[in-house]
Image 1 (tube, rainbow, N blue to C red):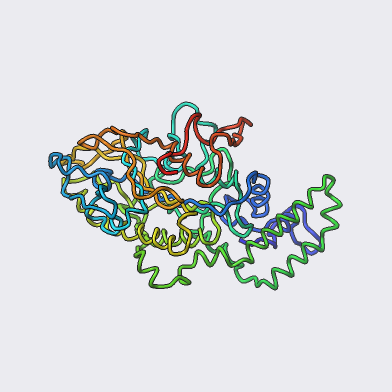
Image 2: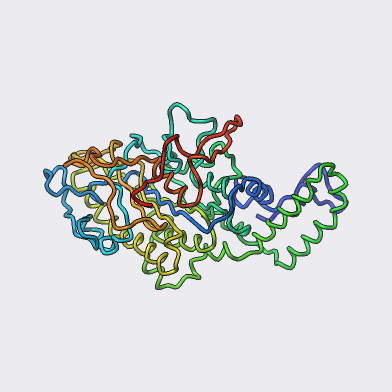
Length: 455
């Protein structure tokens, strides 16, 4: 929050105020780093021209069943096919699950990937957020930074009053379901997290803009002291970043984007509603369609990357019917929310600038067990893309007759990330970021290119 009056410090002015807190304009949830410091870090890091392009990444916690969503196998045995039937879509030759009728009617704007390969075998969100496995050789000290942190480091904010990366992810009690964080880039590139107590830091907490202006004047009144102690000319930069911090606190743009009460109730109803306090199966994320609406509002406010987690898709405990009862419950709600998002972005003229990605950490076993339903299956998984100017109305890749192996156009996690960077105007093949040892690290592995079918 806004911190101008300190409680204790070894260096105080004659009126008892802390010198340290004169220079601190609140943490705003960025791991305790002052906002002025964060803005300074972002400005130093920005090496490419700001572009009004954005990405919404939706993580389906626990691993969605590819063969029940976009890659149905109606001719397979019952223990593989499951109960759902494929339905035709608005694009001739493409069929998806009957529980996704809204998406079927808008398939010209979507691209399912049926052949995502190279997933890890255990529950862990790391690969979805970084493009790299959570463990193994080559992982740098402090780990790989997630996508939003990398974009924040490379591109910086579009607008000084709007952070480049906002995370709408709820904190799951199962640790590996959570975002991995900024890795070796450090807390200065963490996503802004407006959920929970941090949201209170978006307002001045009883300090009026007029009083904030008075305190800003008070800061200026000690300029001579600060500059006399500054032998290296650092104060000019500090003044600029403090000004940006003030701009963020006094700007209503981000706070308004997070305030759904300002949204048309008819739009809210189109997305659907959920309870953010109910974590599905205790350790998943809440089933909150409003998160997709808030993501749209943040994109509209100038955020480059928005991440969110949605519901719980790990349904393999119980009888044969357990998984399908959950699919019957979850699929239509998500169908409503994702199509509302894509339709909303298009109506507002944001769809071509906003690339939407939906996926989970792995696929599901072809054979359905009476004991565990569809279990973990890293050999092939699915993803869904929309917007960003991609060529919609197509399916990428194919699997065998049981949905267990990719037989055509296998797509890697790294290729998906190269596509995301390409959309944002970042040359992932040649751009590097320094790790903690000062070594340059490329954003994707050598030779990795964007998915050419989409471009």
